[in-house]
Image (cartoon, rainbow, N blue to C red):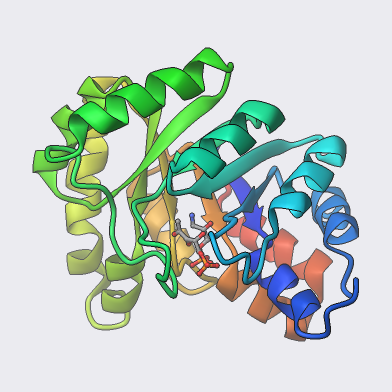
Length: 238
Ligand SMILES: CC(=O)[C@@H](O)[C@H](O)COP(=O)(O)O
Ligand SMILES: NCC(=O)COP(=O)(O)O
């Protein structure tokens, strides 16, 4: 089964536009779970432009599915994960001003750093996933860090999908087989949507989890949040 974790960053973006509490992020997370989300993902960024660090504390008290906190492992992130102990911490190499995530880790250059971070987070009982590009050379070094899972950065898949979907998915199928062989769990995310999700799932049926935010929240404007979550869940059926 491939779990759907709903990324609610964009709900916080909307809320922050007016500075009050509408939409209520915690309520949206609870509703998303009720509508079928199997996890909730947030990515608190250093400038708190969408998810605030306080949001993470508030969400942690109520989420009953898998809580996934993405972020660059600076001291503030590490302290937050230590405090909250989510189901999963996803390590992303974004610089502080990044508009959005645009690459996975260079697991060769940052192997020693990642190894320390992974073992510290695991000592808190948290499953760790490393955001990674679909390049073969990064997988053995990722395994060496001790990470439980990797998350495939799917923006290149999503942007190439309309041109040639077989070609777009090929590098992902190749590295997914390597991850499986190495005993790494496998997540995927970034720019996945109702057009490209099903083919990714069909091509890599053993994906453990996808985290989807931007497109899903955009679709919810037209279809409603409950319908939308159900539509995404259907794309992931085995
Ligand atoms: C790790 C990743 O792929 C990101 O998708 C991220 O969580 C999206 O962040 P923004 O919502 O800030 O663009
Ligand atoms: N890890 C990817 C994620 O959480 C959501 O990415 P996107 O769907 O907002 O591009």
